[in-house]
Image 1 (cartoon, rainbow, N blue to C red):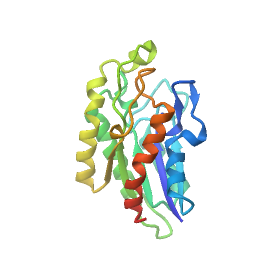
Image 2: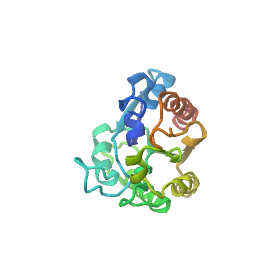
Image 3: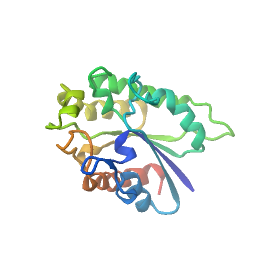
Image 4: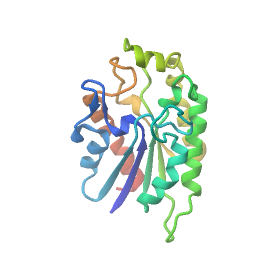
Length: 212
């Protein structure tokens, strides 16, 4: 059996912007991916609302720095054949990193952590798929608009920067914005149709990287 770890933020957790809370299990992109891949693959959904690539959120009620959490998560779920990294939107917040370049540097740090993790029992390091989140869109939601003020242009640059990073580091790449769009309800999350579309869209890339 192959194992795929999906390491992400609220998009992977399944935040529902229509009925604030969590999408039904079957609507989450990780669940759609699991169904598409079948019983020969175990898809592990490791999503956390507000998670960043590598930056501290000092107002959070839990640890949201992806770099600090990743080594423990890798050890928990080993052995792993593929790690999917879908992060970067929260890096765009004011008072966080705030730029696409910073998010790309944080993503690069995550790649290095996976590559240099001390995999026990002679386990091989997993393949890595970098997924660029769909770009932030305009919203009339005042709290979200304030949190992500000035981030629209920055987030639109993420896909290009992540693609370059993937080329430089020998990782796979997928642009989630090619199949899914954020909702203007809050500017950053996916409705049920779009999160399902993400699961369907990434499946062929995952199949290729797993040799299925």
